[in-house]
Image (cartoon, rainbow, N blue to C red; front, side):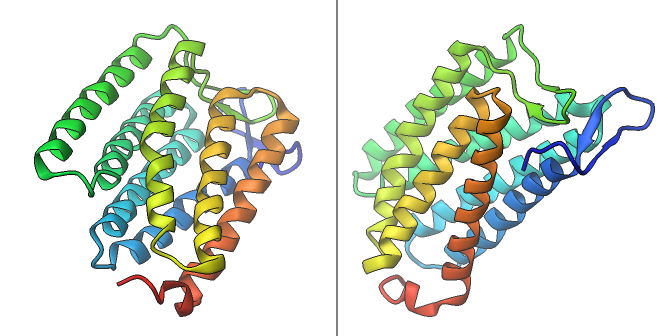
Length: 229
């Protein structure tokens, strides 16, 4: 994901673009899209909404990719990506509440939506801005307060849903879904909190390897879906 070779300068800007950073964002966007389509094809409401959330995540990575390769518009596309990502959290929250009554599900979703909107505006009011480092790394540069809010939002929306989604698979497939997507969440947290190049390098490769495992299993192995419908 993030190493020194494979870089070149943006036209007329003293900013290095790391081709592996581009590859990382593109792979994340494509992997999330392919997995989203697979989940959305299921009749199960939880799986379907999980797929919708993944598709919004793919959109977020696509926006960040566009911003990265178009440096003058970086902040705009980082914002567009953040909006798509935050909306995905609302979808994930709704998907995790299917066992509640419709009234309680609606109430919790409304409360969660207002919380997500609050996170967005707190982030917008932050004096810190995303930037591309001299090594060509994209840093979202969130303040500690905004980092905390994102981590709480991720934990409360995605982690319960991952466990619910994993329960719809059997045996090793259930474990792969559970721990594979948990690894993606942890990787996401590291990407928004860490500024250590080595840590980000390792995180990027871990996230990529997990996506390969999820894609090869869930896209090409029909037995993985034998318990789902």
